[in-house]
Image 1 (cartoon, rainbow, N blue to C red):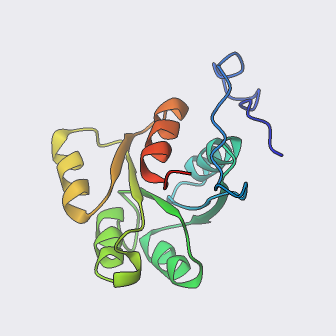
Image 2: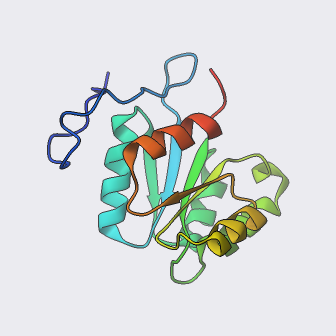
Amino acid sequence: MPSSDPPSHWPGLASAAPLPQLNRANGQPWLALLADDDPVNREVGVGMLQAMGLQVHTADDGQDALHKAHLLRYDLVLMDLQMPHLDGLAATRQLRALPQFSQLPVIAMTANTGAHSRQACMAAGMNDFLSKPIDIRLLADALMRCLPRT
């Protein structure tokens, strides 16, 4: 079973309270798709999600996220807004246009923190909004809001 303690190489987190472990009622991990074109953001995001017990796959952009969403049944998508080929807003709109993805939770992750960005995310069908750099506690709160109650 994964440790609930944040990795010691994350500054400022080693002394933080334990992170919640977010698993299905049967103890199995939730499966998340993290779409971000920046490899460092993907690495950090994967580490944060894994620290809370999630299994994580990654996508390099919106097109890759759509492709992977059609291959596996994800429980949650974390979507960067500004990506090449297909941005996060367009990718979310395409997901929402398909019945099998109408209820899939999508959380926006962006450095654009203005009210306009938040409104655009909600209009595209996203369920929640996180500002970069991602605060792991706010991420945990968003996950608990978006994942089905167990």
